[in-house]
Image (cartoon, rainbow, N blue to C red; front, side, top):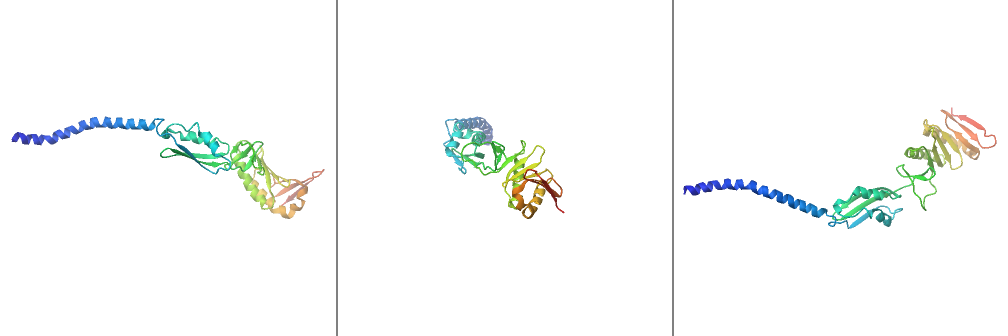
Length: 255
């Protein structure tokens, strides 16, 4: 009887000592199962991409163009897709401004894109988009009524921003700014729809154009057809160059 009691007392200790042995066998088995499952999921022929869905404006970009752009890139396993590479393919299309790509479980990719919005011509053969970036787009259907902007390389965004500010000021005086050039000396040349040219330096150009816009309707508008150029590079005035053989210049100042 005493021997039986002793055996019963040792039984919990034996069970406790068996637990580490079970873990030693169980952990490798679990790891092997996990690795096998991961390998199966990530095999190229398992979980292939079934659909690529595109979401955007579709004004300039077409569904076939988008599909052709990503066709060679979207292959193989859904989980192994290089989303940045797919995004780069979509953004390589001339009329695509920005794109984003995400996985949609279980086997779809969603591509969202925005199109280029052309704001102005840039030089001879480029355009400025909504971010002030120079892009080159060819083909029919390009806008013909956009203003033309010019400047040294790297000034695209700054010139577009300056154009928008100056155009608003001049529109208040009934004038349409059609061409803006930033010269190598950082002075500005403004060509208006009525043929008039304004020249202004880098020092407070918007303030000087505002001053011109205030006096133009009452003082200069009636003679606009005879004005060749107006020089605004003065602290308190302007100089008018009249059209004609003599190219006479008339200086005016504000009291």
